[in-house]
Image 1 (cartoon, helix red, strand yellow):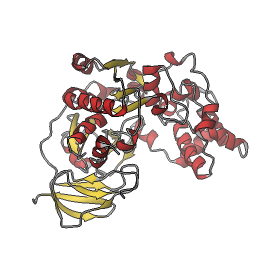
Image 2: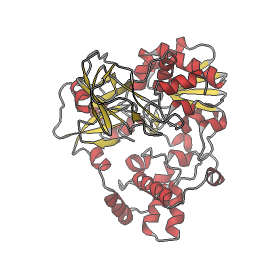
Image 3: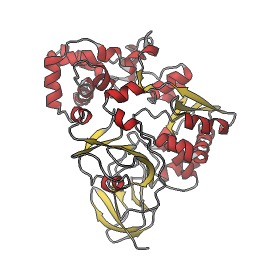
Length: 444
């Protein structure tokens, strides 16, 4: 492990806004091209644009470091066309070996499979990774964290947007472990009864009702929505319900498949056949279920395509879980053998962001921006999860009563296991250790 890679690991850098995959593992490669993902697909979120506009030096510095590390000859920063402020800000600052790619205002333009195809004209192999076609893709916040890591600054904060039924939407750089309740206080009054949080974005985010839940290094947004809103009701549907309703109501119109971004790129995903598997039994059901594996769970099928408002995405996600459990997971080679040419109508079937916002019932919020809020106040308490990131679970390196400073290591994985350490996000005293490490402000 070389110098930058080791610094990135010790700093606890993981993919921001995704599953929390350790960055030091992802950058252990050689690639001809670095793609910086600032497309920001999810409606209402603004965190990537704040990174681009407020942390430009760190972003460009992180890009340059990774280009040198992986041997890339050039880098491309991807931004959606609608983000003209970001485009106008960054364009004159890009050096000669960095280009700007203006992405269409469609969802999910920020998916790395979409990015790689749009930038290079090549497809990532089914079941493969961008490095298989000589590309490394990193989110802009992750690149900012790489730059900080090179200067021995660990990941203690995360960039997130707060929007929806709040008085003052904002985007801020906040301490990891801060509770949803404390975060929402920064947005002023909540303007609805029975508020529910959609964490991570309207399309791919999950429902959270417990406001004591802490933010993590991957938290990209908190959308406050009424419990009775259409979007919350759809996302709250139980597996028993979406299977039962799908079995009784799916008329096999195939729109879920015809609008699927991965299907349009030629990958072996056909949600309508997975829905058909609900109606059948072995061995046909097992065969149809295999068409779920290449699903990226973008939710286009459920929240945009299906005229019956069924839930093919959730059915595909549950089916993928069952395929793994039953040892039916296909190899990358098997998936690649089923890959077809890019669909001839792909460029005409992108989901327009503006229309998607209306379909999701978010139009009343979309006209309000979520500007940068420079938060100086430190919360009284943070609760940092030991489970939030991918890889081996880190073991606490502190005990109750210990005084810690912001940036101190408080948990670390085994040295020979994939994983990254966790760091204190505030200065204070350790007051609890269990599934999470609790720190109260003060001391030192």
